[in-house]
Length: 138
Image 1 (cartoon, rainbow, N blue to C red):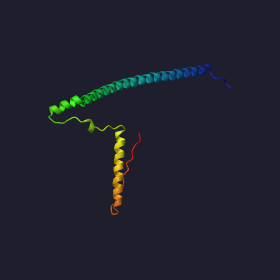
Image 2: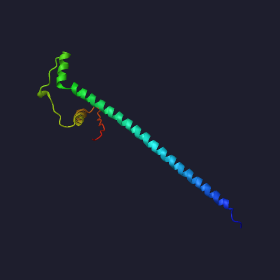
Image 3: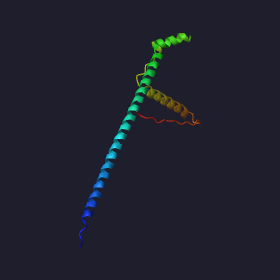
Image 4: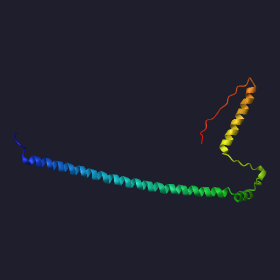
């Protein structure tokens, strides 16, 4: 058996070194690409945060305008300007709701539906059914 020529080992060593350099270069290029993507994503996030801040600021401005328009002084001024002749509510006319109005109104609607179905059940010739809407508990 003949030993391989000495330059065959050198050729293998050169090829392996070249392959290692290509692999390291690919890893380096991949790292640069990932850093570029991170930078681009950070810029997009910064732009979106700025837009979100603008929207929040505009919502706050609109909320302030609504609060100003709903103030008692503003409503009285509009009443006088438009000559509506409306009077302010007396305390006797005001009903204070201490619970969630949505729950109270749904309870009232359910009670009325039960009352209507009970009245309809008294008449044997009347067809009656009750619709119970599904609600999401909060």
